[in-house]
Amino acid sequence: MLEYYTKIHLIIDAVIGLAAFIWLTAFVVDRAISRAARLVMGREAYYTLLDEICKKLTSNENLH
Image (tube, rainbow, N blue to C red; front, side, top):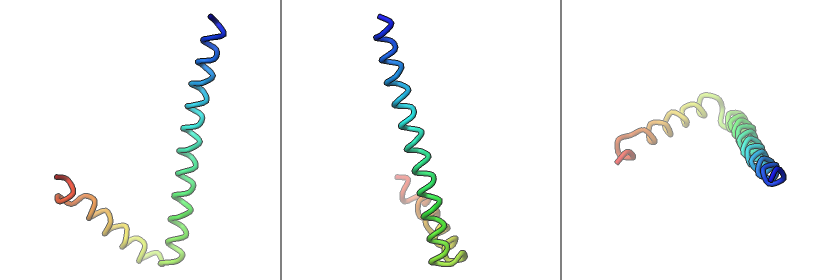
């Protein structure tokens, strides 16, 4: 019975570890893409684009 609980615990730990790894990888990739976009587009154009995207995502048309 103890072996059964040990296996379940190992599986749960593996799933949590995988989720943390995926989250960290996504965070690092997102930051790298943001930096590359700022270098290519220029800082002002990048933030203008982000502002426009946020406006479109939060407009009332998308909430219905």
